[in-house]
Length: 613
Image (cartoon, rainbow, N blue to C red; front, side):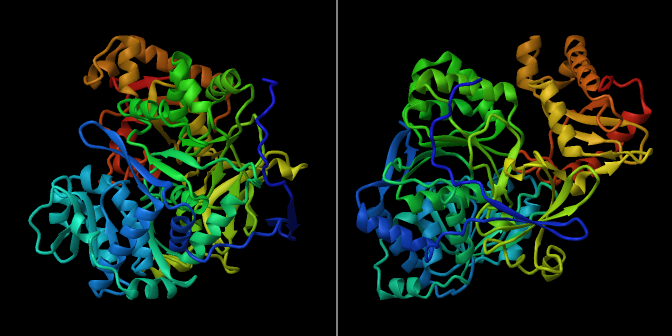
């Protein structure tokens, strides 16, 4: 594919590398970080002054699902009223806990909590709506000790509210329930505003604790990272500096579903729109087979300047673009770049999307990816150049120091990070905080990276796995689990939803797998609700076997070759810590919880769940 990329004024690639005697590398951008904003609420007030009627937050509502919007001026008015309501509670420094998902009211409350200098913490809705025992929600509640709990719909979250007690003040938008202290949203936004609001805003400093951002739990129990205003504003400066727009800056219009309980949606997307004075359309769709059609409907009406998604969403988008001319025209009309995260984007999907981009615009649209974590405010590295290569994590942002500690003789390095966007630690967990930083104050990410080309470091890094997930076979051969998992999923796409690699201290590798039941049902004319019938279907089993055989031909070494797979019948459990609401699998927890299946994988030969490769 030789067509040119759309010309985007990316930040130049200039990095310095310091090599220490033990082989450790310190990698920095040679470009200085731009000045950061004072605080996040000040952006709202600036936008309300300069473009009062411009839409800020837009969302579908009601039976007719029409778009409704809040302008910057109206948003400022409501934020000030909610701020006053919080100040009237006289709970300085206490937490505002949000149980529900993205909404206009949630966004207003978020900024109001910042103004009131009450740390805000959004909890993934899975712990309230999908959990059976509410154990994680209770633990988060006990850690935060919130003074205020916000829910969009009282009836929907009634069980969760009952599970965590009746002490907090509850703010509810729709369907209020009986509660000792509950206030309807429509009354909260009518609170008369006094000078206390402006005074509280003036007292915000860079060290003001703004959020408690819970980690995803993809490798361990979720932890509450402390987030300050200076962290948020530093990360926002880092991200916005990646493209040096001049007078040709496009109007920021985003359609986004990423939950605000996670760092990408709640920080990079939400704050970035405020910085630009842009418009955020809150997407009611998700990258799932049952909900992505809602995103596609929205994309036929809203033409975003950039689009973010996980590889699975781009797979579904590519298929839809091939069938729907109107969708393609709308999607690419204003598009300047696309972002993917969570896993490597398959090359076939990349090519399919770029083919449509060329068809509708005459150019390829740059795909960018980034690397970071909850603890680093998302910002560590960024791919700030056009490239046909997928799987990159880029180069460090200005203001970031990357410490790369050798972990093998394969050009692999453990990643450690130091910057003003890194958390000072975890709430009420001083021992864990101390363990997370090395003797020089670098945060230990727990991941590994490799140079794309050691002779040309400006080509950036690729992700090289979670260090904690890696293991050795009996032979002593080292297994890089993350890379192997991606290769296996690509080989079996789209028949599998996910894979957990087995084989620690064993003679050979195996895998626990979850079927993509909807796709298996479609391809093999099966009932997707009858998992046993799917597991026993000979054509499906033969297809999976052949795909793993082909994978093994391409990867014959013992560290990559899969000898057996076991098809799991029950989905990964949120309550048991096996998965997060975004679908990230906790490999350690799955292996711990499913020891019986692992034993049968290696010991048995008779089960229909077992396939010998």
